[in-house]
Length: 309
Image 1 (cartoon, rainbow, N blue to C red):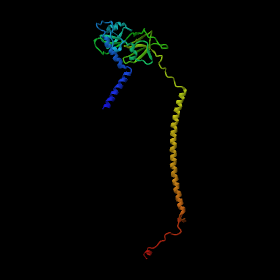
Image 2: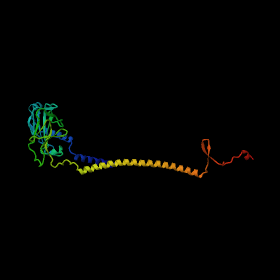
Image 3: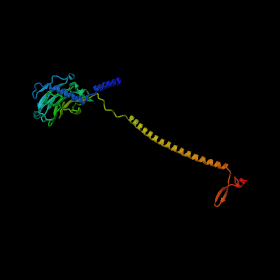
Image 4: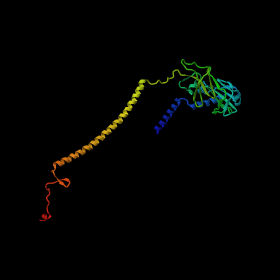
């Protein structure tokens, strides 16, 4: 019983270690968004519509992340847009689904946590990941709110990345990257360090890693020849095995037939030897047939009366 308990404890510790070492998943980013929504809503003490409020506090384990929030009317947003919400410029004609009377835009700047929550293999960030999410403003003390969908029906939403980190020497062209709610990354061209989008999400600019592993070179001809020769040799081995089996089967059948013929010939020889050692019989013509006849009768006939005498 103690051994089973120890094994269960070790299994739990091992699974916990694996989960701690595994990269963040979609659930991790969703949990982060919910947590940051709670802290950003705390900035509303006496909120006024259309004013951007910076969050005074963030979770202790996420120090460095910057949060801001702005409350708006859906009708005003659609008619006027928002000229400046930190790095975002929201045009006229934005549609909110599902429709709410008031909404809150939450701005996120993940700073040094960008690579942790949105890892990109083969790319380097030259700007932190920033997010723009929308929530219902009916209850500013609510937590774990569901995100609203915003769609730019006319002009796109623009994100300005003017302050970029130094691009590594030999780095490629700067590209825009956007992440949807499932964490899927999409790339697009950057126009003067400005990115465009039609929906809410998380955004940044990246360059391809200089130290990223190059694409594997095609195998040399010698290796290709070696592989082809190996495949040919395997084919010939298979064919040879089949032919060898057929030959062995034929030899076995030949030996069986030969043995049967030998036994038959041996019986004929025995019969001939027996005929040669026996008494020779004289041939007599009986009608049209020749038949062997004995010269004398081997057993003389005796009358029954002689036995009686």
